[in-house]
Length: 273
Image (cartoon, rainbow, N blue to C red; front, side, top):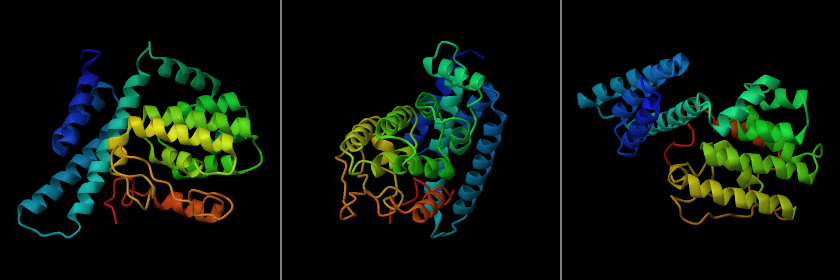
């Protein structure tokens, strides 16, 4: 198979998703996974394909399922996220990619594949944290919580927190991750002007790169992102703290929020309420 075949398949998958042709998108993703020998991802794609076929067969028999829109939104979300995963897997195989070269360096240093908590146990170097975050894949709920605590805690000074926000910006621009977008949004109205400006600039860049994806984000998951590439709307919910979210200074609330909104049935592409 030609070296550029995975990229062609990825383009086909994204085009099919934009046209709401999920089966065609899944076929392209399945071919891409096999060409990259990404067997774990191929298994997930096959599972999603089979589940979506069952839904279509069920609906073709005239069944009226009141949850079908929510189920379809879940399949659409999963397909977009699998596109992101496969695109990143494809880039990591590119020997000339600056992104892949730096990722291999992190592998050699023993940081690639670790969680945020594991990295913080090994080092507090701003340079390592910057490289780790901007080269990371999609954040888990625990990753989001740990970075949020880092940004609101006292273990790192303002300059080091600015470095983390810059890394979140670069990573969020390259591959869409609603958790990183939320972290930037959470810091866009903090009291410290340096952090606030750094976060707001990051939000603008991420919104420019992924405006269409952000238009599908549930307001419950990311309350102040508007449709498409229209202006971002912010709302001050604190009196003195200037927090973008009421949970921004409440660790327990933030933990519950992050974990709840990383679930498969209430993710960034769930229907708006």
